[in-house]
Length: 302
Ligand code: CP
Ligand code: NVA
Image (tube, rainbow, N blue to C red; front, side, top):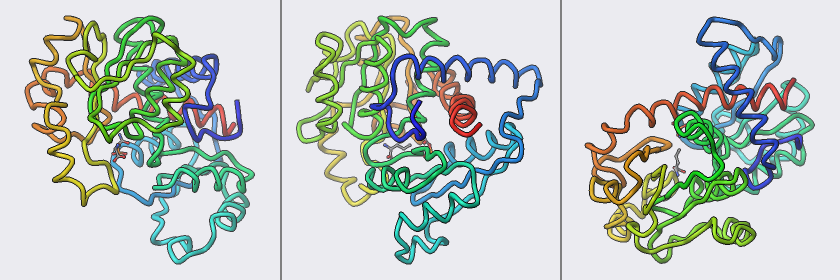
């Protein structure tokens, strides 16, 4: 594995499966109270330039369970917020900590941080990718479906960070993925270029009903991601018809599960009834952030 986890697009199938296998094992161990302090004495710096519930808590709790310690660093409190260059932040933090997790806007900032850090850097979400979330999603899909190979996921909504990471993760693992997005909200060109190597396994639709046909997993995300708050109104119009509701679920496989990375906006990208009917898989997905990230940290920082 590379030194850093900056994007799903970098991971091979074997690397993803190794992470998921370790995550499964750690989940089992945690449930029976078996300790696994693989990172005793180690410290993770967590830089946040955006809000977070799941990412912050799961990384912090995960480090504690691994025997280490996590530092919450709001970018505004760091000198970075006053313009200290990323390369200097990277070289300084590398002298103190054993790993850096960062949630930020521009993906290039994460790649720069990784380039200048001597310790592993983990992407906790950028405008381009959300790899930790998609590792948890793949873990959840495997728990519910018993496999990844041949499973079909339909992603409905914005061609955002989640969509890009799902395209890479699903295709790498032998799944198929159908994406339905309105015109003007396509996935990133790099994700589409990656998908070209998987003819037949990837399809892009404008009609959500077409995308969900035979889908085993139906997934969505907010219509306005962090940083797009000023576009809420225009996005609500653009995404009308791209809602996960009962009518859409009736067109999927009868045993289909629903995933949502959260936070969710009820009655926008998903109706409250569908959300509640699938709360088990959605909150298993949230829980699996903890296990998947513990596996990633143990593998990169040990
Ligand atoms: N899914 C996710 O990353 O949640 P948070 O924004 O709460 O971290
Ligand atoms: N696409 C969303 C995901 C939040 C976890 C965002 O970037 O805000």
